[in-house]
Image 1: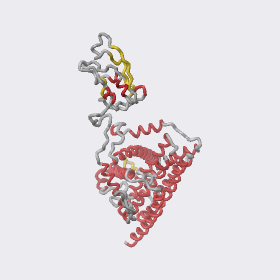
Image 2: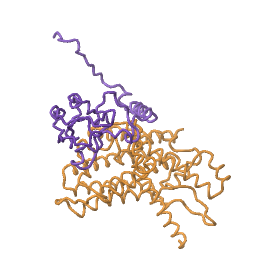
Image 3: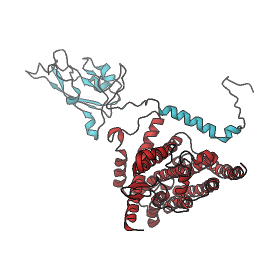
Amino acid sequence: MELGDIIIKFILVVIIFAISLVVAMYSTYAERKIAAFFQDRIGPNRAGPWGILQPLCDGAKMFLKEEIIPTNASAFLFIAGPSLAILTACLGSAVIPWGQNIQIGSRVVELQVADINVGVLYIFGVVSLGVYGVMIGGWASNNKYSLLGAIRAASQNISYEISMGLSIIALLMLTGTLSLRELAAQQHDWHWNVLRQPLGFLLFIVCAFAETNRTPFDLPECETELVGGYHTEYSSMKLGFYLFAEYINMFISSAVMATLYWGGYNYPGMDWVLVHTGPTIGPLIGVAVLFAKIFLFIFFFMWVRWTIPRFRYDQLMDLGWKVLIPLAIANIVLTGLISNYL
Amino acid sequence: MESLSNKRKLIESKPLNFWERAYLPAIISGLSITMKHFFRKPVTISYPEEKREFSENFRGMHSLKRDENGKERCTACGLCALSCPAEAITMTAAERQKGEEHLYREEKYAAVYEINMLRCIFCGLCEEACPKEAIYLDGDIVPADYLRKDFIYGKDKLVEAPLNQ
C-alpha cells in the first residue's frame, strides 16, 4: 500500500467518524422533534431556526455539568464504561460499504474503510462487545439499580444475539459470502435480499431493536423501574457518551440492515444513472441513496419507540427464546429446502 | 347475588387467537395510529408569542384606576387589605397637600400601596370590597421573576398610566 492510499483511507476514516457523530448528534434532535410530532406537539424550537442548534446547546450543557464519581464506585472502570460503549459503537462503521468505487481525478477510491472477508462476523463481534460498556458501567457504579440494568442488558443482548445470528445464517446460505462489499454488490439494481428473505429481515430488525436497547426492548434503562438503569450514577459528558453510543449504535445498525437486506447503495436503474452522470457523481448518488435508507430506518426506530410500550422482562425472554429462535431455525430450514428444490 | 346498581359489567377474557398472539398486526395498527398523529396540526400555543384567549371575567394583575380627570381614585381606606384572605395588600395613607388636587381625588391617598404577588390568590375580593372602584384585576398574567422581593409590586407598577401622556 503506497502512501497516497494510506492518506485516502485516513481521510475516509475521519469523514465516516465525523458523519456518524453528526448523525448521532442530530438523532437526538430528530428524536425529540419526531416524538413531539407523534404527540401533536412542536418540539424544541427555540435554539436557532426550528431549534436546529439544540444538539449543540445540549452538548455544551453536558460538558459544563459537574462531573461526579461516587465514593464507592470503582473509578477506573467507572470511566472505562462509557469510553468502551462509544468505542465499540464507532468500530462497526469500518466494514460498511458506503458506495461503489468512486473516481476522483485519476484515482479510484474504495468507499469502505476495510474490505475484510469476514465483515458480517466482524459486525457481530463488535456488537457483542458493546455489552461490555453497559456491563462495566453498571457494575462500577456500585448501585443496585445500575447493576440490575447492567444484568438485564447483558442477558438481553446474549439472548437476542443468538436469534440475530441464526437469522443471518439463512441470508448467508443464499449469498454464500461474509464480505459486506460482495453482499452489497450482489444486490445490484433491485435484487435486494429483503425480497428473498422477508422473514429473516423481520427477525433481524426485531433483534436489532433489542441489541440497540431501543423501545420496546429498553429494559436496561427503563426509568419506571430502575431510576435510570445502568447510567443512574453517571453525569456530565460520561452520561453524554452513553446516550451518544446508543444513537451511534442505531445509526450503525440501520446501515447494517440497509446493506444486508435493503440493497445498500443499490437502487433500481443505477446503471443508467451511472452512465449518464459519470464515475464521480454516480457513486455519490448511491451514497445518498444508502443514507436515505439509513435515515428511513432511524425514523422507523423512533416511530416504534413512540408507539409501543416496553415489554415485561419475562415477555422479553419468552419472545427471544421461544419465538425468535425457533422461527429463525425454521427460516434456515425453509431457505435450505427452497434453494435446493426450487 | 342481586347487584346493587346496574353498573356491574361482566368482563370476558377470551384466550387470544393466533393473530392477536402474533403481535405484529397489533403493532402495525399502533404504528398507523401514531402516523396519523404525525401529520396532525400541533395543539401547542407558543406562549410568549401567541396567547390564548382569556375569558371575560379572567382575573389577572391588579391595576389602580384613575378617574375621568386622571386623578387617582384610591383613598387608602384599607378595605381591600382587610378583605384580602391572603393578606397580600399593605398600604400607607397620607394627606393630600395643597397643589396636589390634580393628582388625587380625595383628601386622603395611598402614599405606598404594595401587593405581594406571591401571596395574592387572585380571588377578586379586593375588587369587590373597594368602595371607590379604584382596584380591578383586569391586567395580564403576572410575569415570572427571579427574586422574591421583585414580586412585591408598588404603585409604580400598579397605578394606571396617566391620561394625557
